[in-house]
Amino acid sequence: MVRLLTFLSTPGVMTATGCAMLPGVDHMPSDPEPGYTTRAAAMSLGVDPEAARSRVARWVRRTPVVDSGHGAFGLRDSVAMKLECLQYAGSFKARGGFNSALGADIPAAGLIAASGGNHGLAVAYVANALGVPAEIFVPQASSPVKVRRIRDLGAEVHVVGALYDDARIACNERAAESGALDIHPYDAPLTVSGQATAGLELMEQVSDLDTVIVAIGGGGLVAGLAAALPDIVRIVGVEPEGSACYRAATEAARPIDVEIHSVAADSLGARRLGSISWDIVSNRVESVLVTDAAIVDTRIRIWEDARLVVEPGGATAMAALTSGAYEPARGERVAVVVCGSNTDPADLVART
Ligand SMILES: Cc1ncc(COP(=O)(O)O)c(C=O)c1O
Image 1 (cartoon, helix red, strand yellow):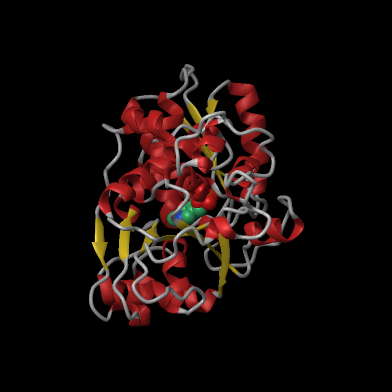
Image 2 (cartoon, rainbow, N blue to C red; image 1 turned 90 degrees about the vertical axis):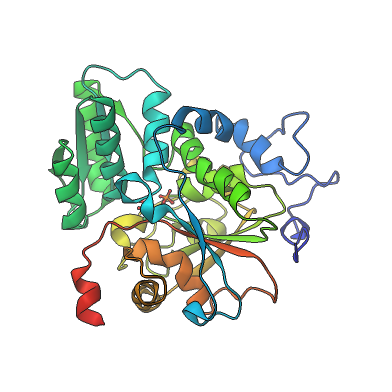
C-alpha cells in the first residue's frame, strides 16, 4: 500500500474526526465500518453492494482478473485487468440490470430502458434470461453492433434522436404509458449497487490493491466501485476530453450539462453526471482526461498486447496509463477495469 491515505489527506475532504464527508449527504451513519466511510455514505443513499451481490450472484459472471504482463502497454509495472468485457452481454451493465430487475416487482409489461447501447443490451439480456418482455430506446449514436444484438435478444428496439438524452425522453413517455419497469443506466441505487459487485470481486481478486482506474459515463460504475472499495484504495475516474461530465461537475461543484463529441460517445456519452454518483464520488474520485486519439490507440494496443477486442469505452481507463495521463508511483498496485467489448472487430483489423 504505497499511497497510504493520500486521498483522505486531500484538503477540504477530511473532517475533524478523520471521516470523509460527502457533498449532498448531510449525515453519516452513526457507526460506519472502519475504513469504509464512502460505503456508509452510499448506503444512506440506498446503495447496498453486499445485498446486490447476494441477489445477482447466480446471474452474472465473476469476471477474471489477469495481469497485463511484462512490458505490455509500455508500462514499467504490470497492472491487473478486471475483464468486465467478458461479462454477460459484453459489459459490466448486466450487474446493475439484474440487480434492478430482481430487486423490484416486474410488471406484465416487462422491462424498459434508455441507453447508449450497452445498458440496453444488458437489460435485453436480463429480460431474456428472466423470460419477460423488454423495450429499449437507443440514440442514433449507438453502434449498429449493439442495436443488432439487442434485437437478437428479442427486445423491441426504438432508435430515437441523436444522443442518449433524446432516447431518455422517449423512454420516459413510453414507460408512463406501458407501466414497464424502467431501469436507469446509472442514476438509481439498485443500478449503482449492482455495479458495486465488480468492486467487491476486485478486492478479493487483487491483494494489496492501491489504485483502481475506471471509465466514467453517467457515473454508475465509478459510484459502485467507490461504495464497494475501502477508502484507502485510490479511485481514478477517466473520461474522454470530449465527454467529461464528471470533470465539469468537479469544476462547477455540481453536475452540469456538457457537450458530447467523442469516439466513445456510445458508451461514455452521458451529458450530465448522475446525482447519486455525484453524492458518492465527488471528493473521493480523481478526474483524469484522455484524448480520443489515445483511446483509439489503446484499443488497438489492448488487442496487440492482451489479445482482447474491446470497444472505445472499454479502452478508456487503460488509455490513462498508456498516454501518461495517470502515472503510477513505483510499486503502486494498480487495477484497470476493462469494461466493454460490444464493438465491430473489423475496424481493429483495418488498422493493424
Ligand atoms: C463499456 C462502458 N464503459 C463504461 C461506461 C460508463 O458507465 P457509467 O455510465 O456507469 O459511468 C459504460 C456506460 O454505458 C459502458 O458501456
